[in-house]
Image (cartoon, rainbow, N blue to C red; front, side):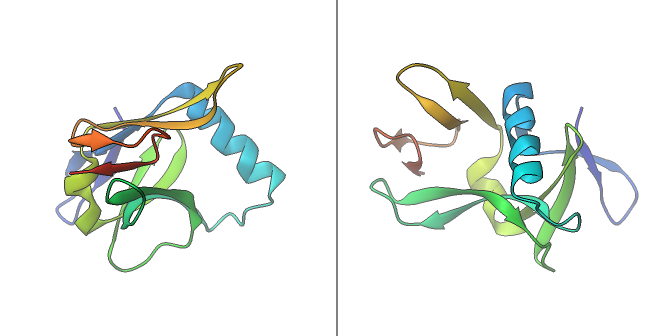
Length: 121
């Protein structure tokens, strides 16, 4: 189980899961793009997209408003306010003939757009 330590030194489960395929792709991107070691994978949401919210997935420096996790050996940061939208989400990577990229399986999404990168909550 992927966890984070909170202020009281108790293990807290990471709110999102990252599949092995997505982990491998993220590590490959990190290597190819020469991402600095002090950058973490940022998972979040932002307003916009055709359904109301868009997913944020990229490497960034941690901020004071972030919770930190380690998921599959990747240091992950997430703005504390975003957890309500992402709790239970799984990030995967598909590499098929008609679709290639990261996918987001979010149980909190009431609807998603056709491209799968935006949702309404």
